[in-house]
Length: 384
Image (cartoon, rainbow, N blue to C red; front, top):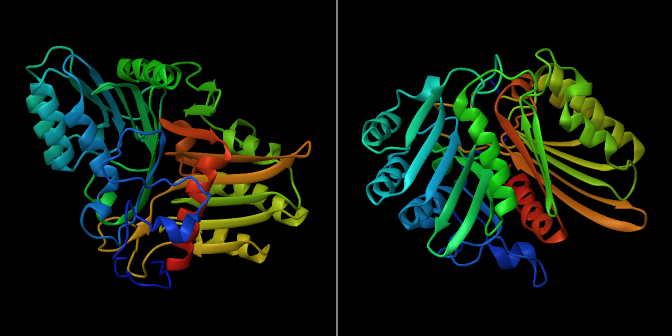
């Protein structure tokens, strides 16, 4: 059993979308928390499990808003590890009855949950809509369906919406977890990329080269599984990312990984330590399943490691506790005299299983998004 240092904190009275904006972001930073009704903007949405009321349900409210606003004749496509939140399944059913095509790909081991069964029953009478229960990865042997993403062809007058991040369609996702979802709107290129992968996933057929990647003018998306059933560091997109970043003073890396562990966790820890030894600033937040040995290894190299979970979180599952479920990395660095800013979010846990699962790491470039994510990560550090 692993114990964090701090119990569950009380809610902040002024919390909106998980954090207080004025205090954290300052007058010149881009705010991730516009009014709670502003659900159709390209930006990040954060959930603070300590908050009360609507401020504690941010990721759920984003998704239910979109299903309730989806235009008749439009298409919504979902990949998720779990569907246990009846507020989300009910919103999906309302959309079905309104004439929206709803397609869901779900890990088979979670298809018997009541919310999933409710949706599966309702969807049978709607041609073109489905719930696919996937055993293992949808595009290769081994692994699992673990991606958390949504695409909506139209919500009201807004088109080509893509949402990706760390939140499953669960009550736990807003009640207990620090999670994020990043949303692109009016972006047919991002929308098409996710739907291209969805088409492969719904076929549920093993591919000799399942890995896919797409480049956008605002970033990049990498979709596991990788192309090797027994991957090494050379096959790991995160290893390549870390080694490509400039090392030394001026580079700041923040990692918030729910489950960094195993052989992969060790080779990524080695990469972070190489950055630290070269003078980069490295900050790491872990979740309950992270390896104690890897944490000790990082700390012994002088890296600041925060156990971002309440002390009663034994595993992060079936516990009444708050914990980080994030799969984040941010980086700020200098290259050719210019400062660059990057955020990576998605479903990749930095664990061995992720490399052969349906997982995505989505990069967003630019200072505005970076200025949304860094204060959120630093808020969690202060709590624990």
